[in-house]
Length: 404
Image 1 (cartoon, helix red, strand yellow):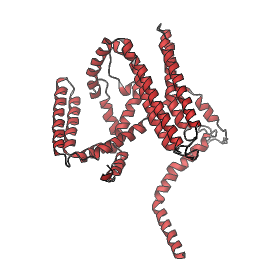
Image 2: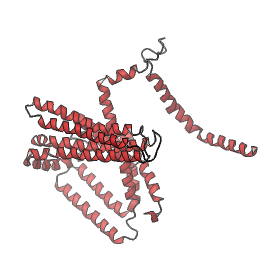
Image 3: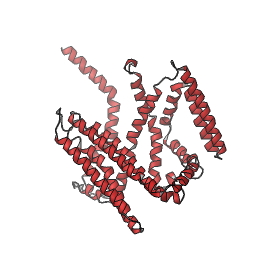
Image 4: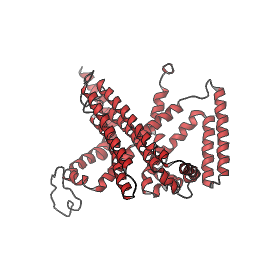
């Protein structure tokens, strides 16, 4: 027994020895700075007062720093930017899973006719794209990118999934500077290939919107509000089912409901602010008040129904904090869907006025409103083909074929 105990201690020491560099790096660069920052957050520490040249004592001040922080207007703008960039997490996870599902399918084995059809279709589509690019008066950069995209399509079909796996993982190796230079060229407002491809499309869309009656186009706002309600109802029913089945505790369900309520608060705030702007411009604000009322009462009805579902109790008991991570990730994904529906509704409402002045491609990173989405697209491009895709491919490749 003593020999076995000594061997176990020796194995533990060897294991800790191999893990020591990683543990030391985590403590020095992550854990200790995090604990130090947490202590400083509740003190009056200031680099101008507490340094080697001044003997000013550090005092504990409780939540005074946080109270002063939330009263600053810039804080809410920075918080909004942070929440916006958090939307990339569910998008990157879903995109990585979709890529992994596509890259684990073998198009050649047992499907030679399908493979030949796909290869011929890829060649035909590439020829059409290149002919269209040459005839549209695109720049040399646009034609080059179109040719690269066509080459990727043809080589990907011919080389099966191995080519695409290598290609999609390449952005993960690119340095941040190289990635920024590439996307800066793509986002160029005047010579960028993205805007050159968007300009003729927006011209056609603008003419179609100008020809359509304004109320018909703006009616899509109500459809988007209905879609937002459907997404919210589905999310609430799913969280309630998880709570009833014992997958999520009552405390773990609080934060997901907060995230699901945020888009409705944003919808109400937009409608209320737009009604004031409409009144100042001499436009009847009635439709905005109706939209604000529907957003408020619709959300209230959904959450009252949710409270009634929770009041029925659980079929299987669980801890109050059980399932917090899964419920939160699900709520974040549903919140993204809500925000997409709300954003599309606002775009539809503003389209007639935008089309009257002429739809123009955005200025991307040089425009205040488009800078955040531009950076988000760039980060998403690098995140979809990252390690998450490889992990999903490894997992899907090990699933026995009989289960499929």
